[in-house]
Length: 387
Image (cartoon, helix red, strand yellow):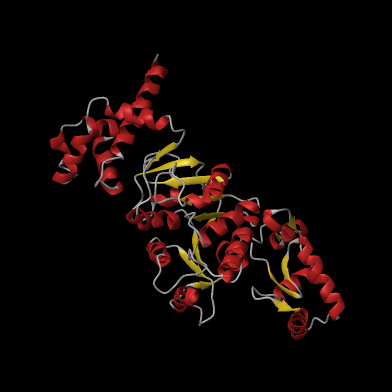
């Protein structure tokens, strides 16, 4: 009988907390003060409204009073439970520890799939929606390599760098988590419907907005603090000087997160933001190893052949099987660029590095790598694979 009563109390507390989290204009800090003052969400909503004024403003008290309708908590919570999503308030033991310490933590998370595992390091990979071929290639490489090293990739599932890095992480067999500027049951942008479903299976979709909330311009900047807050470090792949991506960087710095940036050409406007960040003190990252070695120091956990091959492998065509790269293949890949090169140009780059190949041998190697899906071939020209 006692066990049944405890279960009922727990359910009621979840219902009341769910209702309390929907109070607009009452942030997480104010809610923490309310819980500290009254002891539980049930006690908060059951207290005389005059006592709320000890913690809240008059306007906040009016909002809270409007929520306290008989049966409203149970009705709303029941409707939510039927969605199959998870409700994770800041009072829950499952609430991400990384978010608890940021300046403005969300009152609750609504989750489709799973939450990131606390013990797994995470990197937020962000950047331009309208990225260049260079940005596409590097986002894919970073996503795959971070996942192959056992790190979670956090992003916003936006077009461009975000979704490219997340797709690559999933194809590499890793986990990735997207934070949306709409309800977790709303796929935005709709072009990423396939990625949305993959993330639900091999990661999760998170939002501080209720199910059914449609994407609105003003909802995206606040969600960026959760993207950086869930990560241990933030990587900017491409960004213009005045870019929404840099809003996330500002939030990451406020949260005490390390910021990495991919350098680019001085003449490329899409690299202006990254180059400026580097001038301001951001750490340079040209591959995932730069982040891992300088920040996580994870690649020293297991120094055997299998682990090395796993880290140096790259996804095959269309996300197919991964290949453990041979030493010669790595050398040739390092000599290529996103801009197609003829065999003689590749030969010149390799020769400058002390690696001499006969033209016929090098051509055969490049064709073999193209057949494997490691590089792209355009007639007699070769370049790094873009997708």
